[in-house]
Image (cartoon, rainbow, N blue to C red):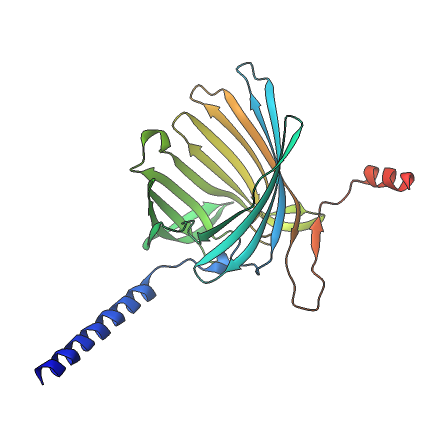
Amino acid sequence: MRFFSGVLVMAGMLRILTLGHALNAADALSFPPEHHPWGRFPVGSSKVVRTTSETLDEKGQVVSVTTTDTKTTLISADASTYTLKTDATVDVASRRITAAPQTVRHGYYGELPGQSLGAKRTSDASLTIDGRTIPCEVRQVVVTGDSGKVVTTLYYSDQYPPFVLRRETSVEGAAEEKRHSSLVEVVALDLPQRVRGELKQASYIKTTQTLPQSSKVTLEVHCDEVPGGVVAHWASETDASGRLLRRSTLELLEYQIPTPAGQPQPVYRRPMRAGKAARRMESR
């Protein structure tokens, strides 16, 4: 009888522990996939972007130019993670290099496999953008991995795309040469932007990164209707004295969003310029 009583007690304890674990999982602060630039799109969605980067010497002269075409495809997604496949070709010094495809799984807060995640709501606050006062939920996100701890404070609104309106990030516990901080802030909302020939609503996002030996400023155009969000960017990197080291631009070449079975899948490509189209017709 004592044996069976012990078994019953142990079973009860296990049920309590299991219930407690389930409650903790349910209480975890998740990020809504529908508010993520990849999570809101169906599997198979893709985009192709072209990044042109220039490196400058001490006299401000361009010493190298690199052009990279990158295709990113959403190959799987669920309530907590999404997986992207990346194919890239690089043109540098009159050579074309095809990089090996990469497949990486991400969490919606940016965490990678093997990293631990903690996310909690800390307070409420308001941001003012374009003269509008926007109530936000302030969340603290801590991602811990082998290279250190990344602590992020983000301002989230479920009413205004791109939904995360401000993000303050710092790397702690890493080697000095790997430490950095960044500030990402939406500086304009609901501006008209022509995307592959169509006029769409877009947001402008400014990112300021402070690195050990330099700083980098990026201005992005973010469209909620395009997989991955970003349709253009302009970036520059300077050293501690303010000398320009590198600069880059990004443009969207095409994107694709799958439609239900039996319907054609639309592909949105950069429209051909009128002059180029006329020359092509003449050559036929």
